[in-house]
Length: 125
View 1 (cartoon, rainbow, N blue to C red):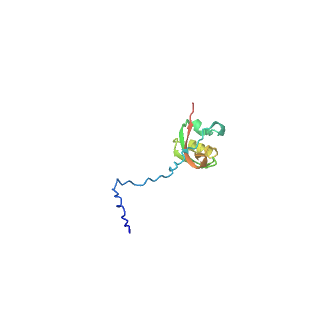
View 2 (view 1 turned 90 degrees about the vertical axis):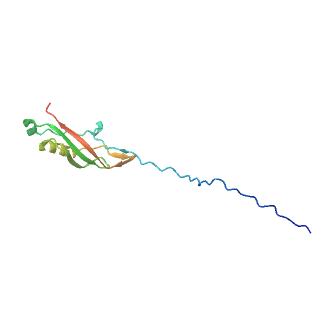
View 3 (view 1 turned 180 degrees about the vertical axis):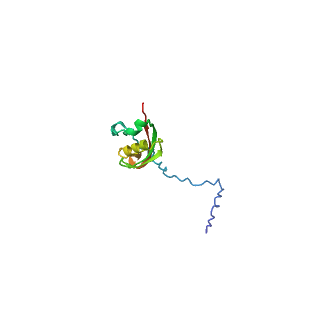
């Protein structure tokens, strides 16, 4: 009768413990916002009419309008951000810019609604 003797079990020495490597897809970066524009040559936006009474009284100044531009380029809302100091000039600017068309803001290739500030200068030079 033969006796079988099993070889000794291998000794496993503990090595350095390392964390598993997790590979994930890169997080997509948000598309940059391109601001709305009113100064493109092809838009043909008319200049505001200088009010006759303002010319006669020597009124001049700069009106800064805050304009909400829709995704299709229309002026949805026009607010006076900074007055020229003369109501006639402010209203002439606001009424005209309400009818303007804009290059809408974009996120990547998608048009989006956004606000833009439009300065209107009334000068008697």
